[in-house]
Image (tube, rainbow, N blue to C red; front, side, top):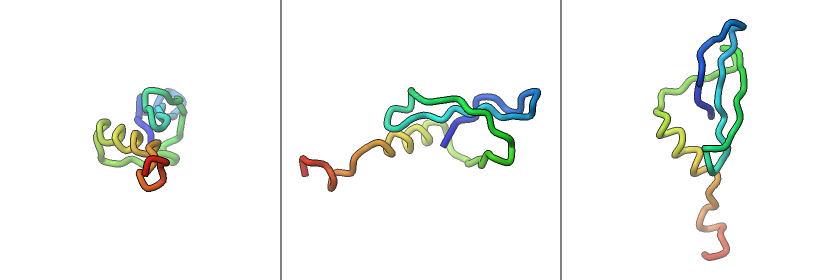
Length: 65
């Protein structure tokens, strides 16, 4: 899951930020064609919550449980 930073540039590519899990402030920028991008109707906040939860260890698998 990524966040579109810039719509089509002069080469026709879309600049997308792909955050890392579980801390979405780190990540990488990638250039994709329109065919490589699947758009979803969610807010940036919802996307960040989703990414945050990707890096969390479920309680049933943690040593404390």
